[in-house]
Image 1 (cartoon, rainbow, N blue to C red):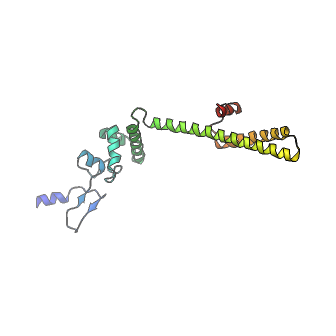
Image 2: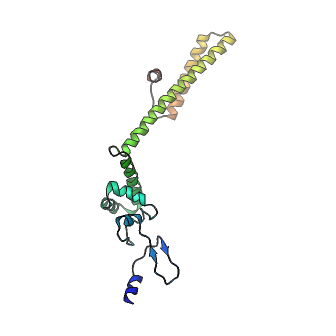
Image 3: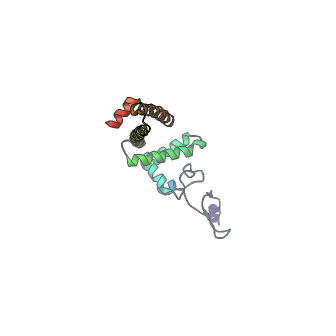
Length: 188
């Protein structure tokens, strides 16, 4: 009877309970961290709220890069309100480190910055093509109305540069090239 009483007084986690009758023993599933570390998951387990039993890969990745003791130390140093964000950051960095052991998330940022530069160059090229088409259209319009093509083309050119420059600056406030470097980029 004493052993039965000891089982009833064990702390229980309410995360995943399974009972068939009210008097049967409650089966508790440990968090993913405790399951992987093969240790008993206490009610006060600091890892349990962040590594649920159904997401073991989340802990495996973080554990592989940071180690369980370091994860626990990081979490203990933070207030409760910041722990979820810290775990999310650790898991993200761990995944990036596993993909790119040298640069980690900095490598991913560098790749994204390169993509931005390539897309900005493509945008500048497309704007130049639009300008070229507008100039051709203006020249055709001038021929039809017997206007001087040079005067109309110059007005069209000036209007295009001003309008596209303003729209480009407003859509890309952190990226601005002067007109000479745009043309160097396009025709290089």
